[in-house]
Image (cartoon, rainbow, N blue to C red; front, top):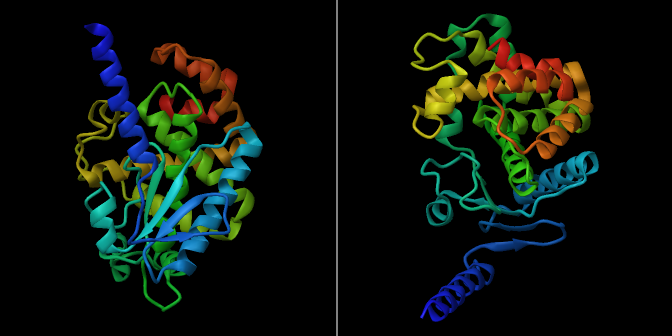
Length: 292
């Protein structure tokens, strides 16, 4: 009896697997000429080429550092197709609906624009930095440049999840992605560093007033159940930390972090994690826990 039960479950699982592998996207166009499989909403081919090209370069670059590349397919979608294929309800946030498909917005949107503060209420120097970093080709202000780079942060999750790393902490998996993102941009697209740095630094510099949770322990406990604005504050702190880690340790810091998390499978206590990061990775990484 059990034999037939397990056989049935196996056939059912195989059928589900094959259905997923054979899924077609008749209402999307497939982008050709890249090593990454990609689909886009009609009318967005040029934008798709830019996004897929950057992701392809990032994967090749990081593969050169750590000897591994994840399997990923990209979907560059308009609002209509976002509703059909995405799992994050708000249009504009890059995310994975499963382990391999990465969803990215094809158009500027209100979500991105909502992060631009009233410039007339900011110090002149900061207002000028924001204008320089986030003015679009049409002369309007938007966070499109920042959110396009967040797609590379999401690629980082593909690297550590498919690469078999033991991330130890939820904050570490987010920090890992930000270190990878910053390292790629600094080494390959330094002209885009302002777009990556200005917004997180602005949020962190504004302080913690208005945020209910600010400790790493809170982040671990409420990772999937936190106000989006509060979660965004944590990400900005981790973006700034990623910059500091790269500036202190360069590419080697990311490589050492990869090796350390790859080779150490046992969950560490806080008392064990700090010396591990100090000795095996870089003291600037350990500071994220000790000096938070």
